[in-house]
Length: 134
Image 1 (cartoon, rainbow, N blue to C red):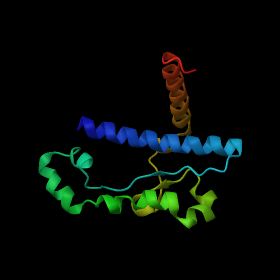
Image 2: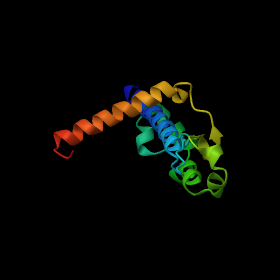
Image 3: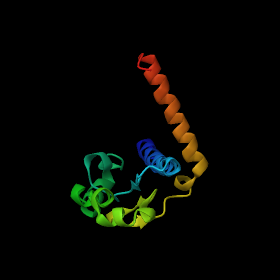
Image 4: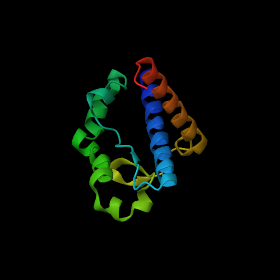
């Protein structure tokens, strides 16, 4: 279960990062649409590994195929509606099937999003400096 908690935490970080990216792009006047998404439960090898072995057959039977799970990403990347209604999609969270959804309370935490961004900048800067790249 620790692996599932780590997975869920990384998904939260993706939502926070996408939200903060949108906020910063808007502040700079950049024509960018940042969207985070949740494809739903997709029966891939990695996802199956997050569950106890007794639950895996049920997940295989009820989970989406990778192609079905890709729909959210495809909507975000290629739907004409996203471009036409960009204000509606800026910083949005798409749920399974590419439907607009509401992120968790933690995923909507602006302070946490800003802290994540600052930590990310600091970490990247430190790595670059340690490699003599900055």
